Length: 112
Image (cartoon, rainbow, N blue to C red; front, side, top):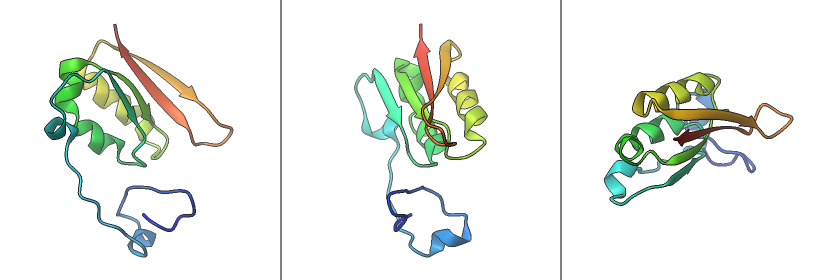
């Protein structure tokens, strides 16, 4: 969504989203990347679940270290680790919060 003065999000189900909506074409990472991936850093402004689903093959095959934001939607804090662990059960999961506000909480995943 455009026009948020430095903030943004990727959604389309709120009434205020229709005011300044921009359509963005996206491809799955699994369709774009055909080499070893060792690290994924993901802050996709609320589209983390979709992005992770689009990287399922990469995650299962290469088990990259990951840093994934889990603060855009309240359910992200449990849905994202649940999805990631369904791909790679041996991931060790760590959570770190970086601010005094509700924002900036990151889930780290490391396969050992």
